[in-house]
Length: 268
Image 1: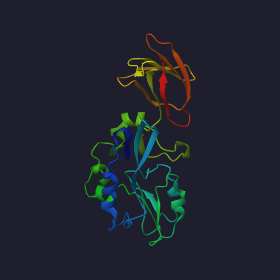
Image 2: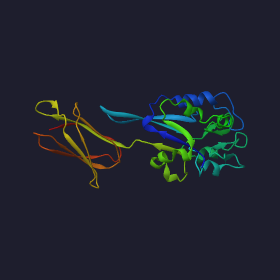
Image 3: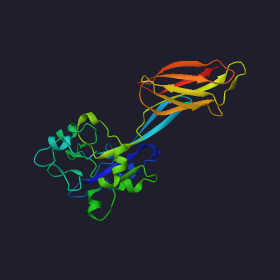
Image 4: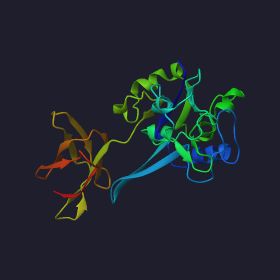
């Protein structure tokens, strides 16, 4: 069934050990027949993207590791000439550093922007899955070995069957059938703070509901700071309901289709 990467976004703390380990392994040293040396700058065969969600003070940061997806239906293979891109028996997709010389179309073919152009060498380059290390007895690439939180994992597809069943892939509409699976990709959140307008104090334990367009309802309660969060909800328009003993109920409609929603202070 071949090898796969499993990336759990919820476990990534943004340390970028994976990014550094990749540079350490590939910059300044070629690993024939799989790769020429990676340039010191301009290429990230493994990169951690950082994105802020929400607005002050309701903010969280998500870190998402990106590399080659080693697709089953790899566009780079289709664009390559003369067998310049091939798939190993373990499923890893490799650019031949000799045959691929001058083939910039390989770079342009990747919808994930995971293939880079080495201007000096006139060569397309990308993650090899550290194929040279796997050949030497390693069980995982350097990026996975360097991850301290278990956010990056690598192994046989059959060993990750349960996780893959719950996972997503990036750009599924491209039909590339990636072999990199993502858990806990950020969705939307709706958050706010409940307070007593007269007493100018937060309201603790207020019942807060979140209803989507289909009528499905989630429920939580305001915490010791009056805050409430609905995390990892689907993009949608929601109706937020707030009830607390001694207060008139309140209803607010929010639009979380395009971005996370921090309602801010809600006076009862």
